[in-house]
Length: 113
Image (tube, rainbow, N blue to C red):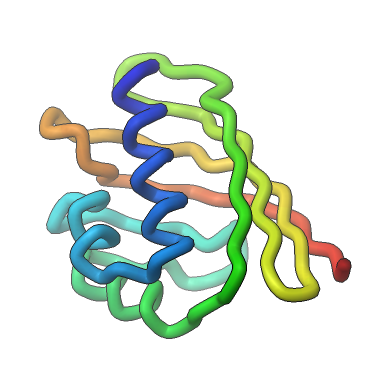
């Protein structure tokens, strides 16, 4: 549970700072990042970082809770607000032996503020 919590702290710090090196440190070289069920996933750390760096938000406020961890997979409920938008979502993250994400799946809902 602690490893997932620390990873999620770094993940949301990367969201706030848009720090490419921090983003890269979260994912294994061959990680796959699924943006919901209908979008093409990012494949590999380099593509994940490239896509992540494509959008910058200001005044990002985040909160999360690690709901469950089992056999290297974590379920994380999260909330993010920025500008005039709020998001509420769930991550399912599979970790490798080094504690990096090798598979990231997210689902979320958005609303205007």
